[in-house]
Length: 271
Ligand code: SF4
Image 1 (cartoon, rainbow, N blue to C red):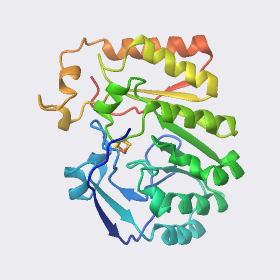
Image 2: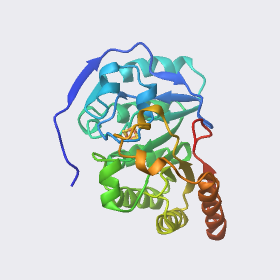
Image 3: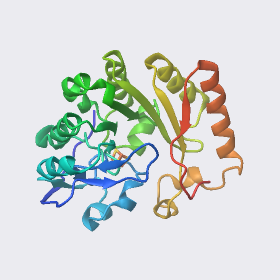
């Protein structure tokens, strides 16, 4: 069971919907919400989020961009079609989407205007939109982040996100529906979710679902660099070669399984 809690929901009117993206293979970013109810303790998105209340209460404040669909309608008439990353600094399918349906409306607009849609989520709610995704499957890919298959670890690091089992079922459903899928294994945290069994199980899942496999050893950010942060004890004092060892073992196993793999981010502040 995913725990629930009291949230603060704010509504804003926006002037822009799409923003230029610096992510590889993505031309534009679309984030219908600011902040994320999933509240992952490692979430880097808080560093790129402008709403101070959401940033300092990560996971408890969500801002709804209530007019985003109408702004997107206008922008997609003017902008050159390209690949749109949906949910680059929020989860566009976090539970609040079940009520507001902003992501659903936005992907409908994008796909009808020949934009491509690349969704990253942790929430099987994306299956609600399988009707739209299936009818544009050549222009769609969906990635699920899975960091661990152990529920105790998942509850610790992603306390309000759906269990990994539910994510796995969703990937299987998407894949069997002909949607291009990918798995994002990250952040990989030394001594917490970098064990051989986890790596093997996730690569096996990628093999079975014909998913591209992204791996991403943790990027240590300032907000983690305190003994109060639950991840600190895992990220401090780790062997210098941990990162290269973990990457090598993933790449070797992917090669054995014939699974295509890629680094998740090529960002900074690694250990
Ligand atoms: S689901 Fe993604 S955006 Fe939401 S809190 Fe977790 S890492 Fe951050």
